[in-house]
Amino acid sequence: MATLIELKNVEKHYGSFKALTGINLNIDEGEVICVIGPSGSGKSTMIRCINLLEQYDPDGEIIVDGIKVQKGKNLKDVRAEVGMVFQNFNLFPHLTILKNIMLAPMRVKGTDEKTAEKTARALLAKVGIETQANKYPSQLSGGQQQRVAIARALAMEPKVLLFDEPTSALDPEMVGEVLDVIKVLATSGVTMIVVTHEMGFARQVADRVIFMDDGQVIEQGTPKQIFDDPQEQRTKSFLKAVLKH
Image 1 (spheres, rainbow, N blue to C red):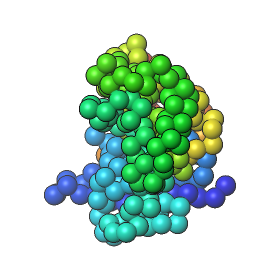
Image 2 (cartoon, one colour):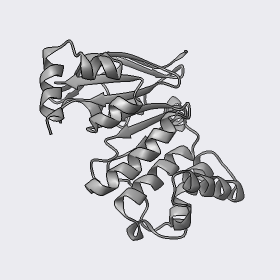
Image 3 (tube, rainbow, N blue to C red):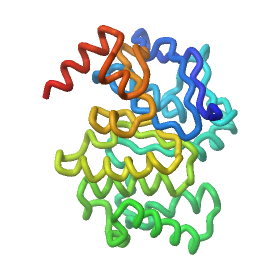
Image 4 (cartoon, one colour):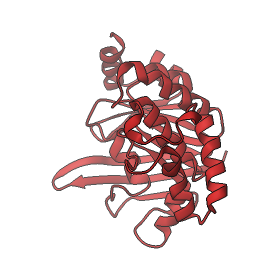
């Protein structure tokens, strides 16, 4: 497998607060990564650095598909390859579901309207809400809105999909429908990095689980290694706390 994403000594400061410390990771093409850890451990900050939604410190380096992630002309190329699904959907409220999905391919890639609509309808079918195409975001449940957000990310045909706690803003009964969509995507060959609090999901879909705490990668391995035989005390205590519920 070819390496698609490299993080080399990535650090991030907010003033005197150090959010990330010495992150070194290689992520292979087609790999599904789940990032777990307590709130405030740097998980979301790390993935937001990959498409420069957060500017990492200058001594580090992030490379996506051979392109260095930095401000300037390269950034558009990186973001064309990296799709992002946020906690809070970030849909345009004044556009229909269909138009939300068509917008980026038409504006960024220059896709014609007919092709963009055909792709958007196919993606809505893929995430199970093709009948909602002409509604507006406010008319959909949270789970449906998040599935639209996933379809919108897929519309750009990204090589990498980043999920920043995609179920944390959802009512409990809607979590499953979104996770089911992500599970299907996990078998499709697209490279995925999922920040999640859903341990059962991480165990089920991940090729590799990364445990972070205090801005650092503490431990990583297969789901079996991390959940059944963690080596680090911080991993053990975290899993003991979250799995007892």
